[in-house]
Length: 305
Ligand code: ADP
Image 1: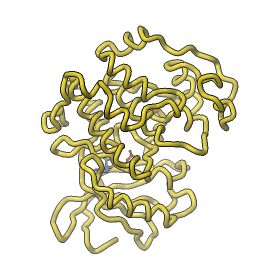
Image 2 (image 1 turned 30 degrees about the vertical axis):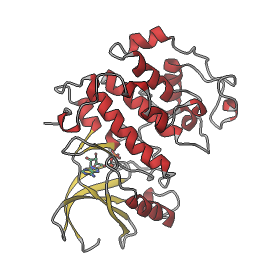
Image 3 (image 1 turned 135 degrees about the vertical axis):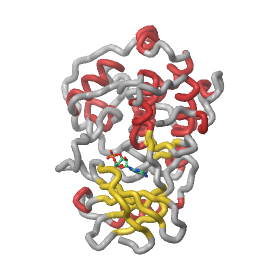
Image 4 (image 1 turned 180 degrees about the vertical axis):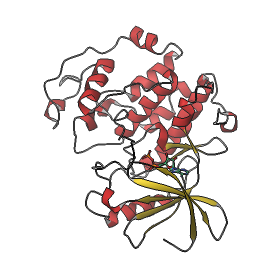
């Protein structure tokens, strides 16, 4: 442990990490100490993970969580000192007392895409975006957490909590075990989160990895060589039941509150072939963000009481 911070109490436990509330002694401000167990790393704690974290520290952006410091302690655990943000989008989605209107969804999407754009422009992928990685500041700003971390972590062999690794936000290329993936994996996750915000319930909740493929393709159609050249050569591609792509009318019925441009944007993010998915820039320039309603100002967004 560094002498620059105090560790006060445990506030949470995730798949790879234990999180504590602490204080930065020099300033007195609250910080979160995220202690990642050495065992969580695929090949021990490698320096490249630390270098990447250090690089992320420089990547300051309004919609990315501030990484105040990073160091390895004497037990060789990686300690991330982060701004303390006690709320996240999952808590908001699950709080059925909160009313969410289309302008709120637009605001959360805009902030998420702006943060993501900044990272992608700097060559960093997230790879594990989900509503509980979208933290919310007291002023209502979305702050993407855990950027670049997923790359260094292996699949957990022993779960720290009852938390399971979320596969619901994983694009088809990840499900097929593609070795080389692109920023499009993050766009897929944001598309799924967009759908979840509209439905107020997870869009594609697979029960296990195999079921995730079935659920995904039942909802969006099965990728074929024709639509996605090379797909049948990916590692986990087996003979799949071919489900048709949903019609536009089917999508309208599934998302009754969505406008036509909201549906267009969602479809652009959820293209099965990652090469056909919109990138962050195309998403940010999309007509959905130009039409009314205007996005809710962050301070007026619904928040946990
Ligand atoms: P998960 O594996 O669920 O993504 P994490 O390991 O990221 O969880 O974090 C575990 C818990 O710690 C979170 O659910 C949250 O309650 C808390 N937490 C994580 N980061 C912060 C932070 N920056 N500020 C405050 N609380 C946090």
